[in-house]
Length: 78
Image (cartoon, rainbow, N blue to C red; front, side, top):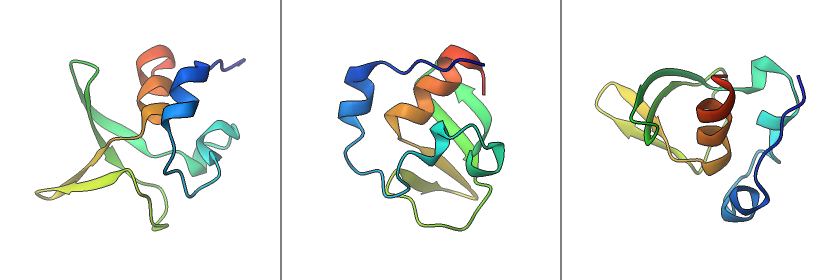
């Protein structure tokens, strides 16, 4: 699959401490979106325990605020 991420989205993702590993093509580096609310709120299950500046706790779950991860899901459902 040829993944294209908008340049503006990449530029907005200034806090990525994972060196954009979600774009590597390795699914084990990608948090799984468990619930998507109107393409704006993405509840995720992370595959690793690595710290992430965009992962925010919400009750017993986590919300992803990463612009790149959101675009990946919204465009490709991955």
